[in-house]
Length: 315
Image (tube, rainbow, N blue to C red; front, side):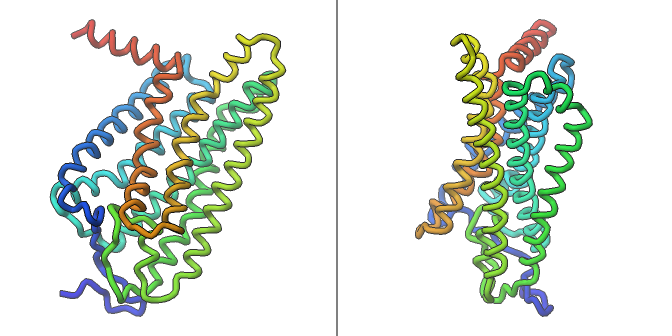
């Protein structure tokens, strides 16, 4: 039975995910660390959200932004990893065309939302250190809700054209996706017609989102560093830098794999490294973010330890 629909766009009803070309025999073993990463991601991010939700002392802008980040990370991992585990362990390579586009939309939208939240967290650090007297007046609860809504709205508006453009392309050559999930850069390689518009739009969105967000984050931290260096004591400087230390680590974790994935796709010649880096891009930040904040943020670390000791005492 043909997997292609008989409409004018000639798109397949089903895509087939390859996984990691050249490492098919190792898929079952690769699924073990993947499952571990996913379990830690779920437990870590759910713990962060639970702690922030139940502890009144953490009901501050910095922690609400962290809660938003944990929600996005959890959603991003869940949109990809379960299908990857089915692929690695059970050989379930089929994914419906509509489900593939939905997965692609989810990954892109969540990535753009995460970038906006990281920008908001940089603004939070800037206000806390450079404008402390205006902090409480500007970063109110209604303002946080508006920031969250704007982050989601921007992501939805910018991402919506991707599946629309992809659904209008003819896939008369192949319906085999050389990846472990429906990544946009992998999908646009499949059509037998020109994908200039889709590629240009993807490049434009990447430059606008990452370029603008990183620019504003860089400006925020430049002002933060200048303000901190003017502080009279080294102890005050260390405390100020420690306030934003976790955020800097998360920014590096979020943007570095994404940059390498983009460069490998544009200039790389081997498929397997591109796919591996693409997996790191979607798996590593959600896995590491709760660990970074759990270790480096004293309030969260103390609350987690207190919760564990309380549970141990009850048992």
